[in-house]
Amino acid sequence: MFPQKYQGGIFDAEHGSWNPTKPIGACIMFTPLKNDGTAGDPEVFAEGWLTQSAEYMGRPVDVQMLQDGSLLVSDDYAGAIHRISYVGGK
Image (tube, rainbow, N blue to C red; front, side, top):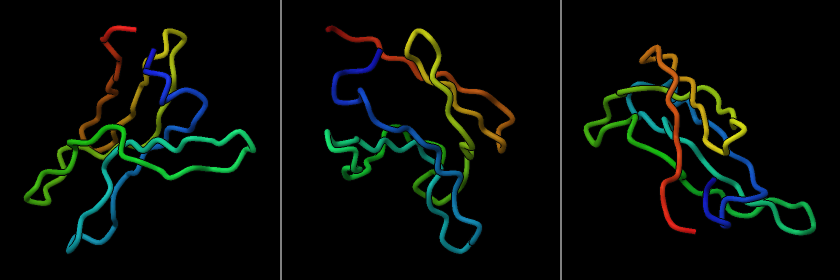
């Protein structure tokens, strides 16, 4: 479902820091895989669960790809499952 750039890589959830003095994470990362099987540089795929004032709005735990190519993201802070889909031209 997502553009070619996101094919054949790994999506993972970053739950966030345990240290409340410097919150980090709370995002979904994408790591591309090279043809030789090694990992490329990870990048932020989805964010917004951590505000600029360092307040958690959610904490992603895991991701699961559905058959239609969208991603489900479990969030144990908000008690929710978010669905991320792509709407765009091919």
